[in-house]
Length: 173
Image 1 (cartoon, rainbow, N blue to C red):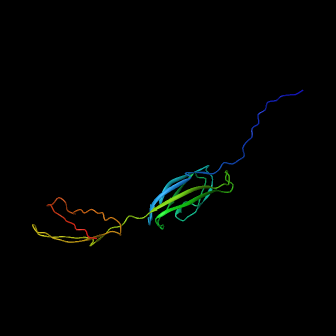
Image 2: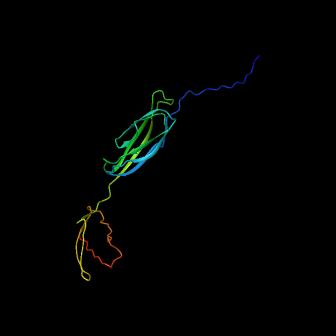
Image 3: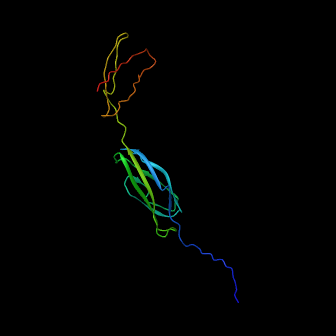
């Protein structure tokens, strides 16, 4: 004799979830010498467990650890960098005993540092012309720009709405 029995077997998974981050990559654009940080609103961490953070480069600014939070701020600072593209990482490692696998999560960070715009110079810094009605006055000033940069500027009178006036310019290289 045989007996057929139908049974269901449930296997409970004991595997812990992975620590995940969102986004997994971020990109920033800043100017060489810029002293303000370029913040990223926040990075989301799932599940909310304790973790430590390590950054690959000093221009990446992140807290040293997270304590049962689900997000953190991430900044970069181009202050001491030359123009170019920089790549780095933020590594999140679950704290010992966290209810996740011990595999670290990483965020790829890209920072593109642009050259600052060329600065025009003007000498003298101000020019005042005075003359009697019906006569003219002349004066000169020099506008300079770095080699190869266009010298683009706008002139405005400090006193508008008075009698008409005329200006002429001669550009020399």
